[in-house]
Amino acid sequence: MARIVMKFGGTSVGDLDRIRNVARRVKAAHDDGHEVAVVVSAMSGETNRLVGLVSDAAALYDTREYDVVVSTGEQVTVGVLSVILQSMGIDARSWLGWQLPFCTEDVHGNARILDIDTSEIERRFAETREVAVVPGFQGLSPRNRITTLGRGGSDTSAVALAAALRADRCDIYTDVDGVYTTDPRVTDKARKLDRVSHEEMLEMASLGAKVLQTRSVSIAMSQGVPLQVLSSFEDKPGTMVTAEDESMEKDVVSGIAFSRDEARVTLIGIPDRPGVAAAIFGALGDAAINVDMIVQSRTVIDGDAKTDMTFTCGQSDLPRALTLMEERYDDIQYTELESDEDVAKVSIVGVGMRTNSGVAKTMFGALAEKNINIKVITTSEIKTSVLVGADYMELAVRTLHDAFGLEGPSAADSQV
Ligand code: ASP
Ligand code: MG
Image (cartoon, rainbow, N blue to C red; front, side, top):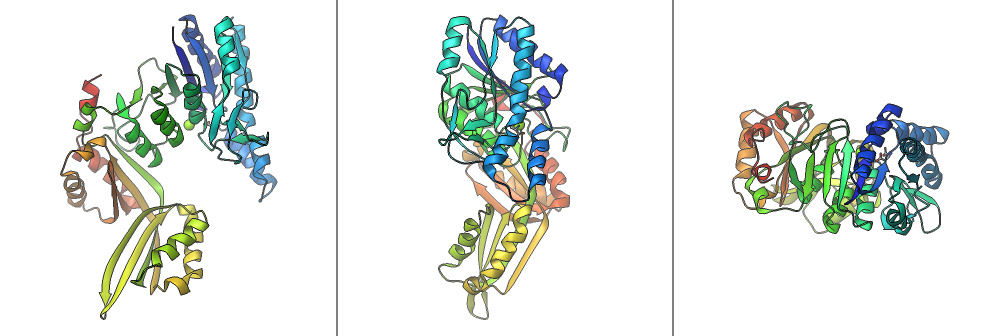
């Protein structure tokens, strides 16, 4: 007998038939003698509809009331799933986020979980093995107000619940059958990974692979929750997200992530003196604009040391970023301010990059051969990202997928 958290996303509970399909999976696990807690999202499209209701109601709204509205999608699915489970003869009970509760910070729209009280669920596990049906996304603030965990937050609810329950595993059921080397819509050579390390998954999730909310992966990593991503529609094993082991380092690159939502800003000819970077990024930070890639280079113009500063941010933040740079002209004193929205970021990710050399050579060589111009490069221990023209993004992904041989079986997979 094991203790299992099963999480089902929006498409998996998209209509009554699909919720029945979820109930059958829950029943099968319960019939096998397991203790089961189910975490569900709102029906697909529902949270978007609720967000639209609030923003149509008033352009500037109170985020406490936003949370009251957008959290209701999950109230529907926990209730409906419980009714169906009960009709199948399963002892099941729903819990709203505030009833357990899922205690969060005093933040609205994007709260982090601080603690989950699982005592009642565990008492009922011990008494009658009652199935707990729990909403994702919902929390309760220290002021007793309803909070939500940010878009995609149900993944985080599930992993945090699994950690609090000390569950044997957390299975995230979704509309894809696992984590892929890259998006199969970009190349049909994309391959499902049997295993991926927490760190790689963290990078891929934050770089734009949308299978898991990034925070859920951090919790799985720090709390040691065995995590699996699998299909709710097909009966086959998914991708295990696990601690890193040596076999994983044999693969130089495990996956390729990309993001179209990028914009580049370059400030040219800034006087090369202390404090300019602080002025630029201080202003952006104060305005809560998330900056991603940063590159500074030095030039000498007419004997004067100058520097060019390039950074990238999300496309929706670009107009505000440019306005801020104009407002701070006196502190920064650039000769030119230019920007480009037709850019995309492509990243290779792999724990093997720590121990294998020649990764940059392969990456840049392959891109050069296809005549893909690189605008900005950044690296960290287990990833290298390049900014390319938006039109070249898909070609870059396919080129790198081939260059690193991601189509073939990986060393990590052969260990399973
Ligand atoms: N329903 C919420 C959303 O769409 C949470 C989730 O599904 O993960 O963002
Ligand atoms: Mg999701």
